[in-house]
Length: 160
Length: 160
Length: 160
Length: 160
Image 1 (cartoon, each protein chain N blue to C red):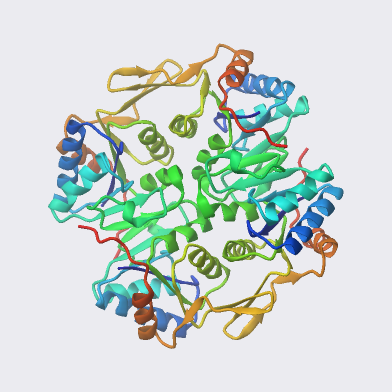
Image 2: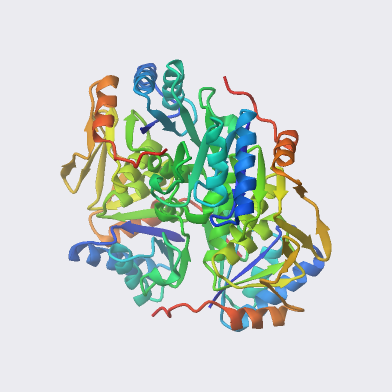
């Protein structure tokens, strides 16, 4: 299982705590965590995953693998700036969004555009032409977010 | 002046009418219209611009310039899928969003992430953690949308 | 007709002269010139095209349209670094390579990979496993390069 | 250490044998193998790495992780077509090229453009304006290729 965790490169202490708990929970269940590779929510989630021995991949906007946070095992420097946001979500079977700003919103939108389920922890809410859009599945806490991500995850053909 | 018009590749007749009027108005004021190059809102906007002799550029998701709608003068096939959404907005000094779905939402988010003003005609509304986000500037009609786009447009160094 | 001119952002005076002559010749025949938008060969080619009233498009690696050389009419800032090289050649019906370094070589390779004819003026030569690869069509001078580009250009469905 | 193995998605039995041996050797030395994720040279290299318990990452051109060869542990579907070639090489500290066609040539060029060492096994040779270009470091066999890749690899700051 490959799950993306998205959120701001700067975040509140509460968001960092949530992200770290999400990372722990993903690793305990054997998922690989994919993210944008930088600080804030991304670093906290990778830290959590690493503490439980989980795999972490960072899809970086810049040219330098060294820009990855220290808990990224496989840094992927794309040199493509924010266009890398598309890759972060496409690589995942489900996406957990924590807080976030416009970059996170773009990732949510790309996920929904690609039919990849999005679980939200204290993040964006959407409406279009006066109607609420309920495509983001809300979760109340990190464990529920991971449970929903596993339950809704796009199936993927098993690898050998 | 380079202005992006974004919106769904399928749209309602009302949205098409708005998009065509936006295209006309942009061309009358000498702006170059940039868009995703496909049908729906994009085609209607290009049709409007072309009817007034305005320039049109289509940043296409696929490999084939022929996929552009017939009013695109300069087709740019990127072969990059929805990652091309980032380019559509980065190339513009302001963005006019008309209706739209998740692709349009991703473009709105990438524009806001890059500090490019967004004007909305009957499109997405955003809130984060219970607070409304007012970054999308609403317009009531096509002429007002174009006026706001010109008023808010990011300055760009003049070319020779 | 859309023709790409590729080559280094720094070049010799002879290369600049060739590039300018290629740009002039393309514009005289009504082609739109597409390039990477920067200096050197790209700027010289755009200057030539502009001197004859031809259209010029610059697919830029960075985020800022202002980085375009002053003869680019439509700057397309991609923010995708050298990945934009792929777009430069995909947007063209034929590619004229002048001198160049590894960036130019990557563009030649992407063009050949996409079945887009490449005409070479004093540029790379290729061999694989001891056999020469003759996919780059040599030209002796700018006019011959443009003639070959028109003769070999991938057909594209006419726009309205 | 992260090393890219590049080469055609179709290849000769000899090339497949070389690629598998390269993959084995990389895994024995603890390197993570990165590649384009598809068949041919890429699959053979991943198979070799997997047989020795090594990590494998596949940067895919399409939208579907399932397109990865069965020995890819972490599939990264980019949806960016051949623009993903840039990412394959940027993610690596050195690149081993085996045989290959124009896609491989584009990866060699992008690597050289980014200052990433390239080791060649029976692959392209380059010359520019009549002078040979010796930027591709030739190796006579898979073990020598891996030795040279480790010797020349771009340093990367250690992760925690």
